[in-house]
Length: 300
Image (cartoon, rainbow, N blue to C red):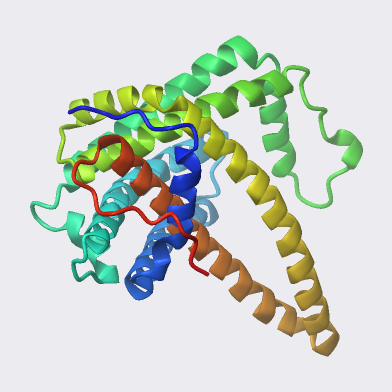
């Protein structure tokens, strides 16, 4: 399959259309995002339960974390594919419902292909992370283990006992950020190819790598704009939550949770919608053929 190179400002278009995604079919789009959020909690809750029941040591905690990671891939990979299919159907004017994201779990829904792609991508990310740490992460492993041991201590932690960041953390974060942007592009295109393009896992990975390399510039623009936007959003939310929580706490301390929690959940829901929207439009511009008319206007 041919992949397309887009213009340098295409990343802004993906972001704008991702923000605008929930405007057309809000019930299905946001309902599906809520289902994805609930599904993502299942492995985390099981991990917390297992930790509380077995109270394992270092190796036991690692095994539990590995098992819950596998479970997360098994649950979330088909859900991601189902969400992309729901967005695609909505973009083509077809009737959709929030529960449609569960379609891949049905017989013939392609769950095994989606899980296989998710597994391979996770293994690739782990291998790349280990390679980067071995080359640029001098002292990071020891610092991390010290932090883990410190977190297991009961009672109040002495600030003087917190280890300092290793010297190479700055370059490591920079290199990791660049690799993360590239991997996110491969992740988005690959999932789109498996879920929507009906490509095999190997072919989807090949398309994803090629499509990502052709579109590094718009992806970089998107990453920069998203980072700056997140900083502004963080400042605004801090002010809003602080003001609303402060007023609620003056009335009654328990009201602070009642006010802040819905705001947090609403933000998390909106971020899921935008994230999957960007993922879909990125795939569609790079790999899609005969796509619906574009809409780059932000709907408020």
